[in-house]
Length: 430
Picture 1 (cartoon, rainbow, N blue to C red):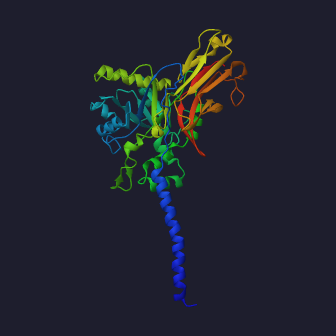
Picture 2 (cartoon, helix red, strand yellow; picture 1 turned 120 degrees about the vertical axis):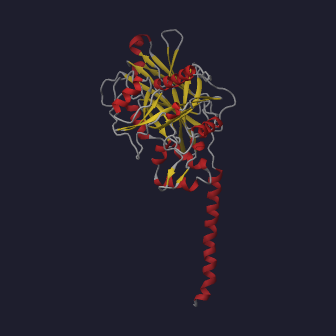
Picture 3 (cartoon, one colour; picture 1 turned 180 degrees about the vertical axis):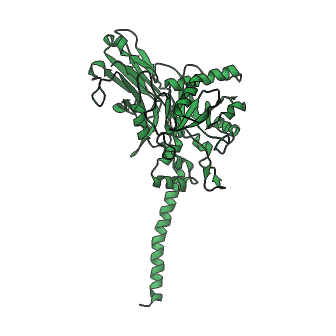
């Protein structure tokens, strides 16, 4: 048959193929455009915790024009205010110049101060609460300088393939960045990274929600280094630069500060609010309040992208005989060597003010990184019998301390998102 007779059939056939592809692409576009994951919280306050705290949320670790970021501190403060953060801590590389330039202080309800990200031979180290700039150098010297200034040192992005931490046997640090958004996206499957880049302009929320994947290596390391009286605090860090280098002269502001500032927060559990007063003494006192809470572990961290946590609590309760129960929270130590013969069990409690009718969730209790108990769509209550404990670690060696924390998972069809991580309660002398 001559080709001109085939032509109408080829045109008609190609249309039959192209049309479904166009429709499919349009459906995918609409699905991405409208994509949203929202946690619904109860309108009624169902908080059942026994200890009351002020839950103050903060944005930790970002870079400005003082180092390799693209945003000026003053503009980033405005963004953080708009996003209703309670505190903001910058961490420009090897400089404390924002402090020296007098930018620290209160901006209405937002408290800002400068930290420093310091280069060491093992990797990047975050210093908070220091008064004087620390030069890059040997880890031990940097750590000693931080301690002399009554600051705290935190290991940055330990498993970031670009700038990982190189010595996991070091001692003396106070915390670890469990969530680091720069590491989160660098650690994704390359196909997901491509998907993020392709969909960012369509719906930035869709792109950024992939950052909520669980950092399993970092969590495993974190659980393994907890020691008696040397609990290691976990935090969420933004590590925002908004300054992707495409060539020597071309840079793009991606992702935007405003979007990254919305993804993850560290929440402090404080017995008092900040002073709100802009004098040197109160600024230093409030800075110490934050540093002390982080050092102790009186905090938790969450992906606030899906909704600001409301009513979260995690407690361990003990009672001697018929006495009133005493409660301990993240960062606390229960010393059973003093009271072991007087109590038979420990009660664990955890809850969050999520409306389970609209958002399915579960609370999981971990002991030394291993799942111990869970509760779905309700508060967690677990009675731990002291006599049931073997007191040995995985290698069969006697262990004097055990560490308990919780995670809150959001269940959405087949997808599970670990939304919130608490810090540990230590039980010493089990």
